[in-house]
Image (cartoon, rainbow, N blue to C red; front, side):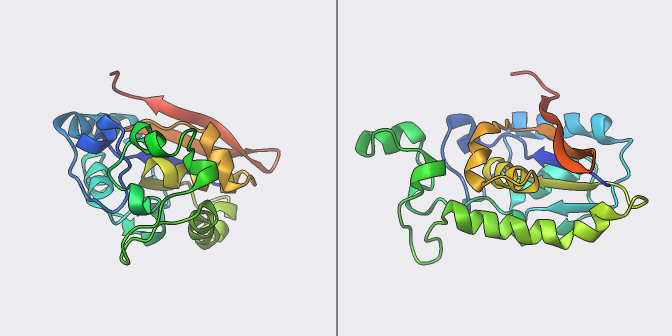
Length: 201
């Protein structure tokens, strides 16, 4: 059974500030580019059967700098649509919604083009991505699938791969420029490594 290697994109100005970033396509900071370059030697030995990358620029740039310019763009990996909370920090949201939690409380409605997503909608999206690679993962000779995407989309994807509800992604903190791996133990999906940092803060 093949594994799934998850790479979160490098730092952006908003990720460094804790601002919710979905469709706003900010470039990597200088540190974010350094994080992405630091991935290259760590991942150089990999020969994934497939590389899937979110269509957002920060993920595409990370894939390029990490040495995976030959990839397929997968729209299902784009970040959770935060709707009316785009660009806002958790602390700011909690001024009007004390105790707010994305995983259980969802987002405020946004404009027509970006109305926001529920955790169930996010899960349905990554479930389709997982279904599209299921045969590949079951092929013992095919190799791993590498994905470059975003914190919340990858956390939900990991939860779903493990057979858990999307809210379980709350337990899987994921920093910028990190690598995680989902594999299997006794034929059952399992976390093999998580949130491995290559460049210290």
